[in-house]
Length: 206
Length: 276
Image 1 (cartoon, each protein chain N blue to C red):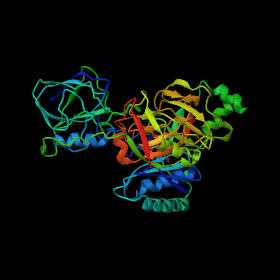
Image 2: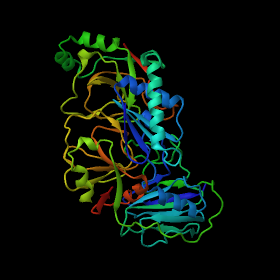
Image 3: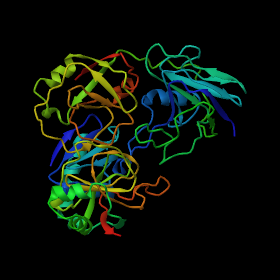
């Protein structure tokens, strides 16, 4: 791990992989260090926001080193965390295109996507938009060259090494495989996001 | 319940408190007043807790009517037509007309008791990026005034916080090594001009290009308020309260927290400088 300063009130922990990101995030959540304000897990980093009046960057940096070491000793991240099953109607407009580019049949694309065991690595882009790791490598495709201006809420999509479900209608460049009626974001729910970092996810074809 | 009626919202008026930090893991940004010191001062002047919800006016221009007597205070960008930086008593039925500030961008209007709109995820702040929080003020809208206070106003007039020159201290990183070796020198040695498409998400800047050394794609990473993110093209964007939680362009430096309130007062056409 390498720690980089991000202004007077944040440290960016640069990690080796998504597993370490989830591990460190779990440590921060379970037993937050003094002066902790917010954590932003992402692809290969965790941004840790702190209150400089209550802690020092050096002390927090030491805590982060210890936490990463502790997390490395725990069981695999994929074996922990709650499991959410999301029913999906696989009728997305990009199924054909994805199948062609992956060199697979449409049925095989659906089978492989629904067979995956996913973990929410982080949220970003929009409230409740979870980046799920665990995608079948055969389905890894770069984003669409021309993003769509509007993708309906509940769209199940893939891009790069992630799969996700659009929580609200928004523009986007991911490939659309299907849709679900399960709400990813409900402001009146606690927490409003269904997919929080560390949550394990299965998709079920209906 | 007593309250105000919006007769004209001006270019952009929102409700803001100190935001909703701590929700980044579910993709929700901090939001809150872009100039926190001015919000806190306005609240203190009317005997509120510092984190009470107030109005954040962008380029002034607000016209409201109070249906009951109230005590208010205005801080931040100085607007003609109203007394700034001290408690003002408003009579029942009175209209308040706030002019357009000659300098600065954001004016805060606190009312004793606070604006009692519903909390969303623990805050009454409007996040213009995600759409979370109360609606942006519109003509005809009514906002209730609450009753929660923190003692009585005890000063008649506070020294204005003052805008001062737009020179912002920065700390290099976290991705300064993604830029050519003299990029940081370019950043601190040049004048940048605030462009018109700036908002609560970020201050867009025009000036010398900050050239990248590393051209690979940066995997999305967490962003903080004050971050100077550099998209392709090399002109930095200074993130404010409604910044996206994650971003895919490298951050060359971050504005020091104590200068962030000044950044929140930058308006289109202003010149800003950075120093180490």
